[in-house]
Length: 170
Image (cartoon, rainbow, N blue to C red; front, side, top):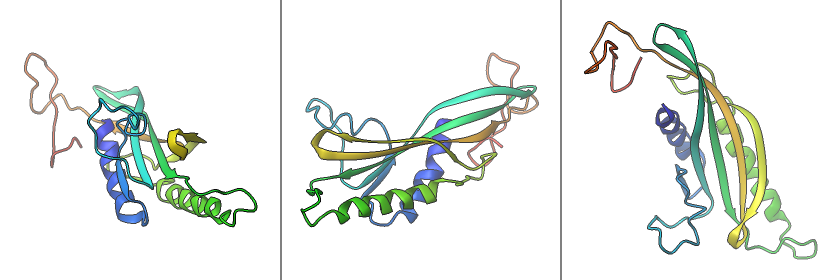
């Protein structure tokens, strides 16, 4: 289920987040930045990393469930500019904030076709990572459903049947 949350959001952000070098699934690229033993694509800046780390589920009816999915979005910006008051580059702080606000405006309320509700921000934090990388992280939640129908294609060794239409579950 988590992957079906990521694909439409990554597509939406990559099409609409101008000025960002990379929009990708978050698989720990930032945390691997200093690990020479890990083979990963180079991280470019600014970038947006998206993850869906958790979904809490409740039963609706029969085999169907309703979930509250958490989606984490991280904006990564390299902060090599000196931004102290007399540096003449204090505007870099404002430029980062404009980028963060644009990202939030694209995520807040975004609703993929299969989701029950749009994304709603529930928390945010900002911190600096190694090499002067500023991280703007926000978590959002959305309600999702997964409907299983016992009267369609059988799962071997089970009495449960799942219907898949157009490559996804209805």
